[in-house]
Picture 1 (tube, protein in one colour):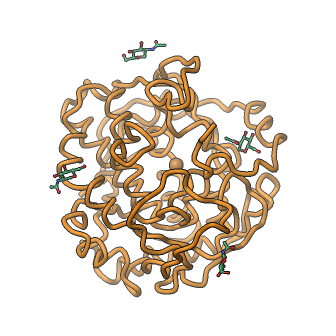
Picture 2: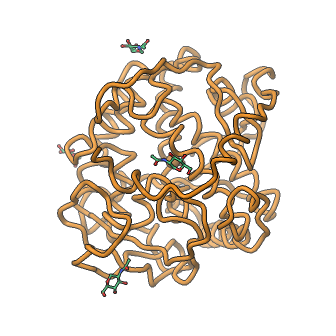
Length: 364
Ligand SMILES: *[C@@H]1O[C@H](CO)[C@@H](O)[C@H](O)[C@H]1NC(C)=O
Ligand SMILES: *[C@@H]1O[C@H](CO)[C@@H](O)[C@H](O)[C@H]1NC(C)=O
Ligand SMILES: *[C@@H]1O[C@H](CO)[C@@H](O)[C@H](O)[C@H]1NC(C)=O
Ligand SMILES: *[C@@H]1O[C@H](CO)[C@@H](O)[C@H](O)[C@H]1NC(C)=O
Ligand SMILES: [Cu+2]
């Protein structure tokens, strides 16, 4: 099947790990606590609204995580540090939380776990910032000048253009006309920081440079303000999940999730890899913005949308049946979400309110 090769990548390892994942269900304590407004929510802010000091504090917290020991190297041999544990977690759960309806709930809790760890392990006092790409999708030039790519107060920019990518092992199956990079990121705080696992579906130690392959024309079409406005108009969680994850794997069907990933990662960058994309720190800012969109949609009809859920429990099932129909059920509030190696299993219900259960945050 012509799955993007990012998906069809070498599957070298860790059957034992997957088995462990299902062998140790842990009670979902958070789900039993009551939901409601929390006091003093942490506020997640848009990158460009942070002070220079706060930008550096977040960057330094990421670097701090990269200096702390891995706690999950027994599961993910390539994990060299605490930051890598989250890449390993994402890689190992990818097939259960993308192109299915666990997508938004699973990533909401992933961000919470990572943010909590930044604060506890690295004494970070802030939150995960978000990247409101609509502010940069007004033109290709605006995108290229986005503050998120700043070399000092951002995450560095594109990689140098590599026209011939025929020798790359991990290449997006969808051709993206207008790709402009592909080389190693050479600016910013992560220029010489190896990505320790991937690219692709494995967690062996394969240190490599962080690559980006900007596609400015994709950004202006997929993450602009009219796309977001249309996203917020839908009436059901099923449709919200669908429009965020995209209507097809081809460019006309791409929306915000694919647009942010592929607009930065292009055909060979880490951000474009469904498995190993947390190797690019922009992953966190992109997903925080998707989480913000879900929350905005929920709050537009609250509390009804505190329990609005649905969509396939199985990857590539309807409406993501791009490779043919496969059996599935719609997810429910009781559907489990696994974080094996980092945290206990929860249920979807735990993730439905960013100011209830374990969560206490808001978006400014
Ligand atoms: C990804 O890797 C896991 C672990 O090796 C494997 O079980 C799974 O089948 C792989 N996924 C795909 C789509 O190849
Ligand atoms: C592909 O080949 C080019 C030119 O020989 C080289 O610079 C580049 O590093 C290679 N890329 C990979 C991923 O092997
Ligand atoms: C956003 O992109 C769509 C194509 O996906 C285009 O039709 C629309 O005009 C764009 N809107 C803005 C505000 O750029
Ligand atoms: C899942 O929900 C959708 C939207 O409500 C519905 O069209 C579909 O038939 C449901 N599928 C199953 C297997 O229940
Ligand atoms: Cu993901």
